[in-house]
Image (cartoon, rainbow, N blue to C red):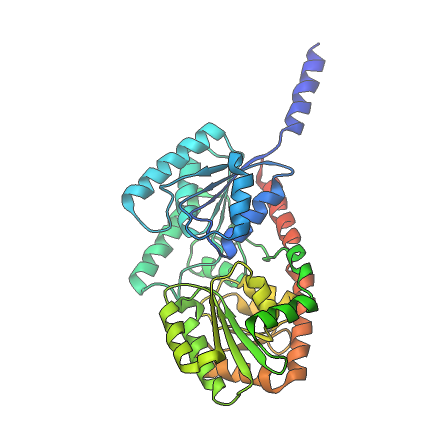
Length: 395
């Protein structure tokens, strides 16, 4: 009888599925929320996964559908906010602590800097055995002034004590975390980012022709686009300035801006100058369809963790010119899978101009980028890598 009981207990322990919490402040449109959404969905077939998130204003339709389908396995926490607020932040730590204590998660995986800070502390206080932090890029430069940046670095150093592993998307991130003495190298693991290529299979040449017709771009015109948030750090102003430079030399170039943000009025001002040469779409749910219509994608960021839109453009066979900042050089091999340049309007204009003037070179870069993206940046491989880490850190 005792032997049977022991066998039953061992079997029960082996069959027990890991219980995992994915935590993020908001599920708005963007690379980090897309990764969290797809990772949660992918892991839910094997593990018991709950998504904990805060106030979300602009989710994509795919995220809306996902949250609706999985509403029984999501926890909305109104006090889990991206903005710093002492009262809400203390309350968020308390509420996360209570959730972690009640749910008894095996792993807490905290995403982005704000949720990462609060959830790591709450998880450690709640006695969670395995805690992972994934910043999805960093805000150590390009976002804030010196004083605020120093505070953020110190906060990261403090919170790093309360997790078992930090997952970063690029070697640059890993080096920055080490050089700033946030965490030792053995505590940091690089996870190569990925996108869901299943979504891209429908964007064939016929869809491209249809999209260009919808945008009223003629066959003999070259479409140069910016598909990102309209914020300074994303280089929206640089794109508009470079468009003004290029437009004077190339009457057959059309410019497409797809996005929304604080610099929307700047785009409208440029549209008044460039007229129908500049197509402003605002934010679109079908941004992949817009990228597919382009000949050239420009990503002129001042700081960029990775730039998933770059990978999307490459996978769709669109030539890319981007700034040599953040993790972008780990996505683009300069002169082989795209062009890299300095983060200023003249340099961006020169890179785009070369792609306009040399169609064979442009097509070669586009094909090389497509092959490299499909080979290296598959989300399924990314999810498998994260799952392997889960297994390695759980008792």
